[in-house]
Amino acid sequence: MDFFGIGTWELLVIGILALAVLGPRQLIQLARKAGELLRQFQLLWAGTSVKLQDEIKSIDDMKEVTGLANEIRAVGKSMTDALRSPDGHNPSPPVPAAPDEP
Image (cartoon, rainbow, N blue to C red; front, side):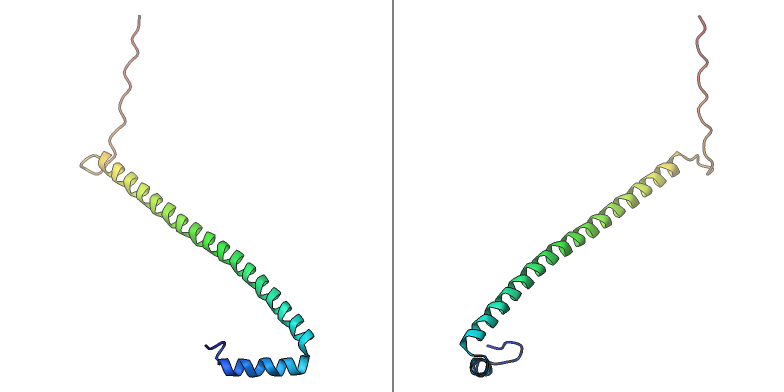
């Protein structure tokens, strides 16, 4: 098992040296504090991960909306082209019918 490139025997030697230098009481307090910091880091990472996933999803949604807008523009252009007369000019608007007089 390697932990940051440190093998099992190296970790054991570091633990024994820490116990000799700090003493059992301070070593327990240090381990407890390290555990608390690790838990805070995990919570912070989990929150950041959720926010990052939400941002990625919103970017994907934005790409989808942009794609739909481009499709709508293309349909609008093809409809405009289809309504044009064969000579390339817009047809004249229809003349409204005269109202019936009683």
